Image 1 (cartoon, rainbow, N blue to C red):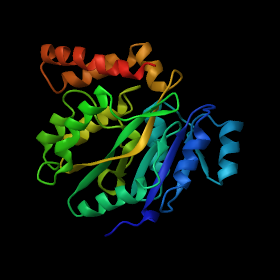
Image 2 (cartoon, rainbow, N blue to C red):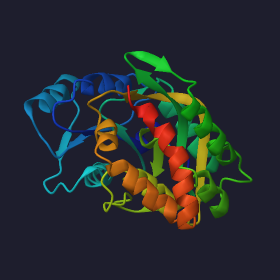
Image 3 (tube, one colour):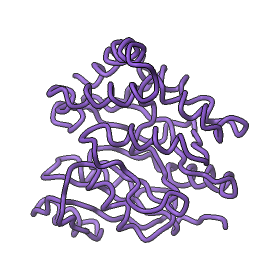
Image 4 (tube, rainbow, N blue to C red):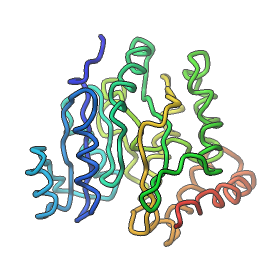
Amino acid sequence: MTFAPSDHTFAVCAYKENPYLASTVESLLAQDACCPIIISTSTPNDHISAVARRFEVPVVVNQDPRGAASDWNYGYDAAETPLVTIAHQDDYYEPNYLSTMLAAVNDYEKDGLQLAFSDYFEIRNGERVAGNALLRIKRVLNAPLGTRVLNGSRFVKRRALSLGNPICCPAVMLVKENLGPSVFDETYKNSCDYKTWVDLAGEPGRFVYVPERLMGHRIYEESSTSKNLKDGTRQAEDLEILSSLWPAPVAKLIYKVYALGEKSNEL
């Protein structure tokens, strides 16, 4: 089948009272094609309800929250379409994200596509940052996944992930009909996306990289990623994942280099 915009859902995972939620939803409503949007939360409150009413977006509530992956799975499962993007509450999407990603998915729709993901830029203090060292390294790691001859190889998919996580979770369009329900690994608190990509990379199917910068990932002091880096959660989980890809001494060496890049999440 050829996927239409109506076959895709943006599931916005909202937590507590984030000041960027409204601007994220605005960027989704400004897409050059219309598709369903839902807000998924485990912390229902007046702020989320007000944003939902303002933009006439339905809210679904996870009554059994067990962390970020649980919330992502709840939103993913609540979407009634074969394609889903887990939009984070503080990020931004270019108007052509949906149409560009749909074109990529449709180009591979008969080839066992697991997911497609775009390049991205960072948003720091209101400014776009597209060319720091970490982003350039991620583009090199992802480049082989932009070619049909390589992006269906389990070896190539795992190698792309072998030096750290180069795939920005909110930039990913998940092909739900090929992945099944509750795709995210709930045993990890912060690196659940990285662990999920590694697990999926070992299965048949394709990871398709779209090298256009179609969304903006916001870096700021109060973000979950910044907080988990400060308390050491992210570091411990990333090292464990790298150790599943390499012998322990090699994984530790790679992680020391990777950890320097993670400091870019600090303002």
